[in-house]
Image 1: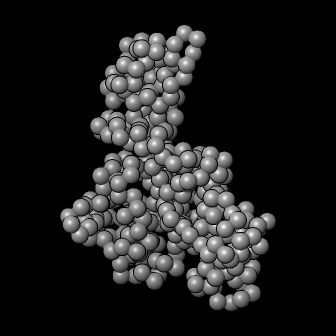
Image 2 (image 1 turned 135 degrees about the vertical axis):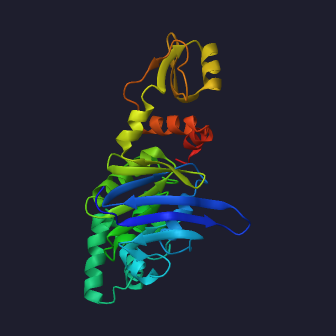
Length: 307
């Protein structure tokens, strides 16, 4: 990563009632796509809200281009575009009208320049062909792209995106990943998710957040290297497959003429008769890492995530 654009030091937050959502988070993000990964409840959304000046931290600091998120809110907000987990728009209005209104609220007061930016941004996110369509007629993926458009219309150098693909079908998820990869070429994107596939191939660095703490930070390749020897393939009978599934985190299970072919992760030794996978996927690497921390529920959250 290049010189830090977003930086946190000793960042912590404890909610009323005593729940600590973040505990001593140190991060440094440069230009490009940065993935923030972790199970539900890990503290990801709390971190995003603090960076976006929507929630003051209980302790520590967070800066965007050197501006403190607590004492320099206005300066930080001018540098940020934010797509929250739940983005809604005026369903009875046309796409172009919605974005024009939000652009005006973002500070684009010059009408001619604003209209040019609205047109450019709709083209950038692939919504130029539906600019006259009412929001209620858009697919879920299109609504998410409109959310990206409102975050980008004032040309911020930093984009913060929280759980972007919840509720989208696989094709729309793929389009969203591709768009994030393109946008990350000339700006900083912080993308929070509990679905590893959302990061796509454009992710240059990532951090794993668990129970409010950063437990891994670095390029995806580092996490992949850690997983070698902890991801396995095995083919067994149907009866034996149930035993394997009870003892290990199974990523995939497919019937074969000889029985059941399985692929899974382990925190310790491989099952008897299993072969280690030489090239694990990023999802498998994440699950293996979390399994090593005794966090098997992370795998179930992956499986149960909305599609």
